[in-house]
Each structure stands twice: as C-alpha cells, then as structure tokens.
Length: 386
Ligand code: NZQ
Ligand code: ZN
Picture (cartoon, rainbow, N blue to C red):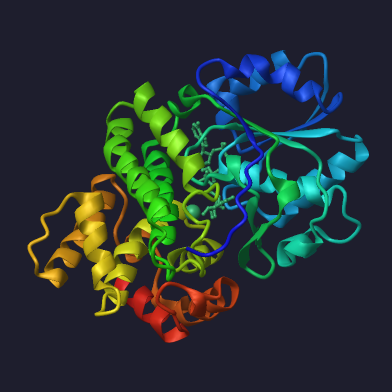
C-alpha cells in the first residue's frame, strides 16, 4: 500500500427531512446565500419552494440553469453574482453538475483572474466560499469530495480540477429526493458509482486489501440496488444505499493508498466534451471494452479476483474464461439497466476518435493508468465501442 493523506471534512446529514436543519447550517456563514440549481428539476419536484421557505430569513440570490456537463460560462455567471451580492455561502441543490459548477464558483468568487485558470491549474485554488449541498442525484460523489469537472465550450475541453477549499462543508442527502429521477439518470448515476470504484480497484499498487474489500462491497451495493431503484423509483432502501455508496465511492476511501491515474474516465470526458453525452452512459459503454482491451497475462489474476469476489462467479481454474465471464457480467449488468451499449447507439461516429484519444492521454495522463493507454490504445477502445 502506498503512503496517503486521507481527509474528509464534509458533514453529512443523511436521511428523511434532514433539510429541516438547513437554516441552522446556512446560518453558520452569514445572511447572503447563492442558491444554485439546474435546468428545472428542483422546481418541478417542489424542492425549490421548500428551500426558499426554509431560507425566508436570508437574502437568497438564484444561480439558475446550470447545464448538465456544466460550462465555464455558468461558473463565471455565478462568480459575478457572488461578488455583486457579497455572498457568504453557496447552497448547491442538484446533481454533480450543479455541485461541480458551484465549487468552482466558490473559488472563482475569491480569485482575481479568469475562472478557467482554476480549472487548468488546481494549485491556484487557495480559498473558496463555503459550500453546502443538497444532493438530488446519486452518482458523482461530488457531495463529499473536492473535485469538479467543467467544460469550456469554446475549446470543447472538459476537464477536472480539485483542491481542499472546494470540499463541501455540509451535504444533505435525503434519499427521497432521488425518487423523481428519470430512469436513465438513475442508471447512469449507478454506472458512475460503479466506475469510480472500479477505476480504483484496477490500479497498479498491490496489497491494498482493505481498499479492495470496501470497493467490492460498494460494487455489490450497486449491483443489488440499482435494479430495485429502476423498478421501484420510490424504494427508500434502494435510494439510500445508492446515495451512500455514491458518497463513499469517491471520497478517498477506495483511492487512498493506490497510485496511478484512471483509465476510462479520461476517455469518457472526451465523449461528454464533444457530444455532451451523459457521463455514466459513456462509462457504461466504454468499461467492458476497456476491460477486454487490457486483459493479458499481467492483469488476468485481478480480473479473476473481480469476477469471483464481485460477481460470485465460480473459479473454475481456467483464468481467462473466468476473467471473460466477469467482463461479460459487467456488460450485461449495464445493459440490464437500460443503458445503450455502443457509441453509435448514442449518435457518436468515428470522426473524432483520434482527437479525443489525443486529448484523453494529455488531460488524463493515461500513460500512468493501471495498464498504460497510448493514443493508439484509446483509438482501438473507441473503435471497439463503436
Ligand atoms: O438540471 P436539472 O433540471 O436539475 O436536471 C438534472 C439533469 O438533467 C437531472 N436531475 C438531477 N436530479 C434530479 C434530476 N431530475 C429529476 N429528479 C432529480 N432528483 O438529471 C440530469 C443530470 O444531472 P447532472 O447533475 O448532470 O448529473 P450527474 O450527477 O451525473 O453529474 C454529472 C457531472 O458530474 C461530473 C461529470 O463529468 C458530469 O459533468 N463528475 C463529477 C465528479 C466529481 N465532482 O467528483 C466525478 C465524476 O466522475 C464526474 O466526472
Ligand atoms: Zn464518474
């Protein structure tokens, strides 16, 4: 196991009606609140009205219409509002896109230069306004981590930034807010949770047994509960388990002590950058293909471990057969969630494979991933996903 710093300072208020604590939580920071949210789901669900009523004694300024795969222009819009209204705290109500955008707004509000600088260079993020979140989509883990992924539509670049000041102070996770999710977002969010754990499971560092056992439990949680949430949208247990899995999947628990960069996320971010694809859908399409691409004598034992421990497949002794059955099970699972399994099914052709592969290597440092991925490797993965 490698050396690491593990630190998670976010206060989690988990469960039904935790929102009642909102005035006290927000009151810790001051009166001027930036309320950030997406295109319309929280108005439709009634959550917006509930938040407004609870914050009736505060000065609440809205940052509305944050788009999925949030744009840097929304960050700039938010930062300008923070400066104009002397905002004390940002309340992000939504999924990963709203929370990510709000994190960079919080940092950009206290930064003299352009917000995009903070995305390109995380070291410039030295301070940020406090951030409180109310989660409405289980998937990204943004509610309990210091990362944000932002798109610059001028350069079609989507990339992540990360630093401690952007850690949410408090996140309210009420699983009932997930009841209104469209099926495809439940599926995509579940694929995202699964992928976060998988990316950490398949890393170079050996003997991180604790992390891998936690990872296996989290993946099994998704395997058990995503189908239930899809079948019965208001199943509280399913939503609660998925929501907590989302937070634990990307708060450092399974990543700490394991070195190297991720493999599939950098490729997916290119699909979202160029085609505005829903993140979890891209991950589900690419993951089984990536697995088959890297299966070799060097990796086969890890794939056997994955097949046996995560999918409970019998270890027959034929390691490649077992490894393939684990990969097939992964693919079948994503399909069973109703996620398309090819790029053509989501309207993506091969015209940008080369440029996307080059960007993925550059932005994702995939030469340092579990099995190093070159531009040619990524083009091959994209072609096999077509
Ligand atoms: O915009 P609204 O109207 O709110 O609708 C959203 C959006 O259309 C809707 N939605 C959210 N909660 C809902 C709901 N609809 C009905 N009921 C609810 N309760 O769902 C749609 C997708 O929302 P979005 O926030 O975009 O999804 P997600 O949470 O999957 O976030 C995706 C973004 O997070 C980034 C992704 O790259 C992508 O940009 N990621 C962030 C990470 C992080 N911060 O650590 C890590 C991830 O790997 C990921 O890269
Ligand atoms: Zn992700």
